[in-house]
Image 1 (cartoon, one colour):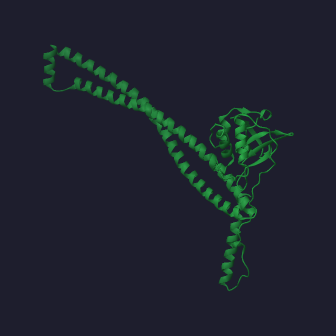
Image 2: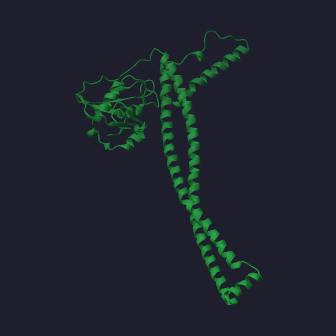
Image 3: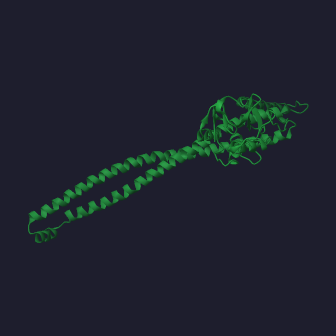
Length: 332
């Protein structure tokens, strides 16, 4: 069901309630219950969960992308901070040195000049010494300007990344609030759905007769098969509920291979394999990388996967093409 459809139903209910209120005001009674108080059907709940699930998947993708961007920007800001710190110390030290030269060159008063003449023997010697100090001070000023220019450039770069960090944190707060609302909506619909007679375990296509699969891939496949019929719950990775990437990460964790419970991360983390080269345990991705399943093998001419499809469904076996349009595959 579309988002527009989700909104349209409560709008009609609201209009019905408003009409009832108006009729009551003018003394017209309504007979019988109104549709506004009817519980949503299993079909309506499933459509609502599908729509919310899609939004949750998008939200989760944005959250993880924003999390990666925040970490990257924080690392860059920290690196720039480390480069700026010694420059600040250098500039401070050189300003102090310039001050020392200036004080030596221009420490004033006739008494100082007289003392200098007595010490160095003549006004010419004194002036030469002061000119030397002045040139040294000017040279230090030039060096300070050079360091200050370098520091200013780094400061500008750090300010850019600090601004990005602030934006990432604001976006994370916004997306987290959206996630909380979507999770609450999903939990409410799941509770309602579980009350309906339509709720039952469905393991999908019959599990083919499979030989023993050796190696880590076999461990991952057997873990997933052991959880056939466990319900899909978004953003979970076991032990009794899974979403699609949660099932793949938990299955491969049983084989000693750890990965993020995130489809795009899993797709990027391992070597890619072609459809023709699939082996049991390989991760197969669908619909632009939004969904992932575990390949369990080809038997009697048909290739199969096991996956956690979407809210309202359970971990089940499907033919290779059933979950959606092929995107790619990787081998952990």
